[in-house]
Length: 189
Picture 1 (spheres, rainbow, N blue to C red):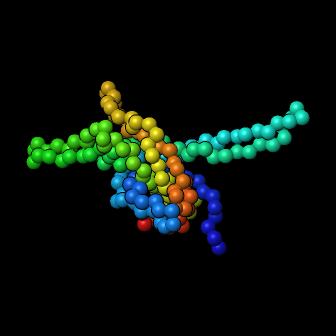
Picture 2 (picture 1 turned 45 degrees about the vertical axis):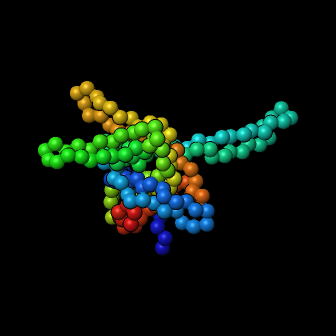
Picture 3 (picture 1 turned 90 degrees about the vertical axis):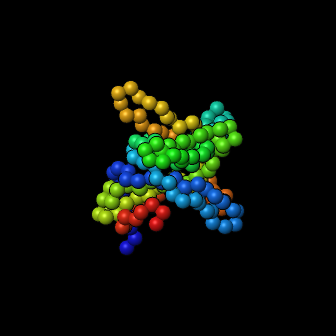
């Protein structure tokens, strides 16, 4: 018997970003190594639809809708230099020795490349109707659509966030995938 095609979804356990390396027209896309989005809090998907209405004879005759954009908004508890590099570019340099080590992310005009990336999020096991199962949401090809929220907050934690717009893959036309697993699997498995 096939799995039921509906479920409750509770929480988010993990999210990872992978650089989109290739998207060939007649083959499978390739991705770089997965980078953890530390302290993932929210993974919210929205879409935009353009509606055209045909009117005549002083009345509505027809309407057509077209998907014009899919966007994701992410919040995460910990700032990550690797995530910043993956979503807007730049470079991370590690230097020094203990106890004076540094890790520096530099964004320069030439390195602010806004590369394409994949984003995958997953519920905790048992965060769905199926005991021991999970749900994965995969955004196959994203580009950052606004500069990430960074900085500090007086007497409080600063939550990092970013938004990205989806494009369909050239290789298979996928924008996003939602996968219900009977048995929980790790991201990328």
